[in-house]
Length: 215
Ligand SMILES: C[S@@+](CC[C@H](N)C(=O)[O-])C[C@H]1O[C@@H](n2cnc3c(N)ncnc32)[C@H](O)[C@@H]1O
Image (cartoon, rainbow, N blue to C red; front, side, top):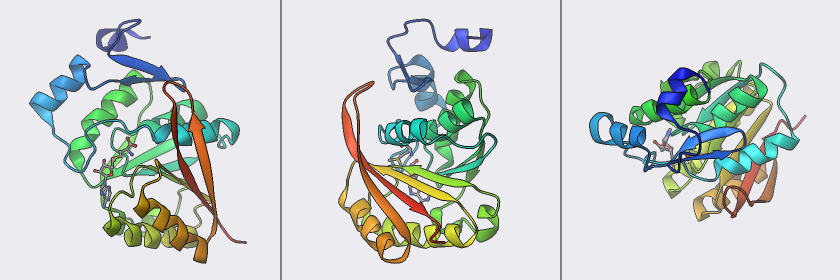
């Protein structure tokens, strides 16, 4: 740990957890409390780290990325799945979220994990073919929790496939809008839906939607 990080996290800090090679701060950590009380309040559920990111990390350990890939994490929140890609695979990562109030939490985690992430405020609908043109992989964790999110995500995935994105991985605990999204995607794209279970740091179950180009 470098000096800067030593000031934020102490060895064995009960307010931080280690998982998949990352340090992840709990909501009880003083830096998180400081951000929440003095700086920013995320408003579209980006107020904490959601465990579905673990399914993406677990999958990528056995399906590693090519070094230097460009990864776009959509609905990134605190951005841990993207930070994992930057740290383990030296990926260039862009974190996109409709709510800019999540970015200080993302940059704090990038700093304590010694990586750098580019962030942009944008909704799913506003991510254009040009934005996607040099993206290798699109990832998202727990981003399809309202019915109104299904169509914008489906349309974004179609744009991504047309723009040359090589893989899309979306993780979810298994909510019904996510299942509807999987159903819709399977009709028009080369799709697999995988059940996942991770037992560390806590036992959690969920699913991954994986989309690849059809040819
Ligand atoms: C449940 S949180 C998940 C955050 C993060 N992916 C994780 O797993 O910890 C959902 C995130 O999606 C973002 N979001 C919601 N609607 C969005 C939209 N239309 N476009 C882009 N981001 C959106 C929220 O601001 C929030 O950060």
